[in-house]
Image (cartoon, rainbow, N blue to C red):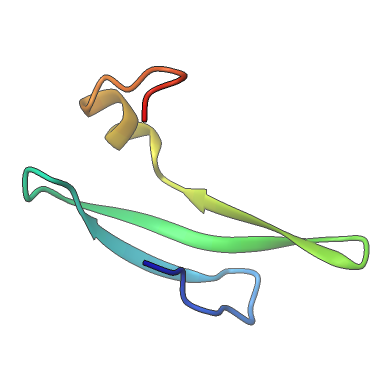
Length: 58
């Protein structure tokens, strides 16, 4: 899967379905950073907590 192209800093909402069928709403956006962009996926904390993900999980 690929992220969609975005042209505005506020980005786009993305609905993602996990392996158990639960849908999660994230915001894919960017911040201008000198001559480039820093892309971020916001709203992932509830998903990470629900799945009890830890650093190093794959």
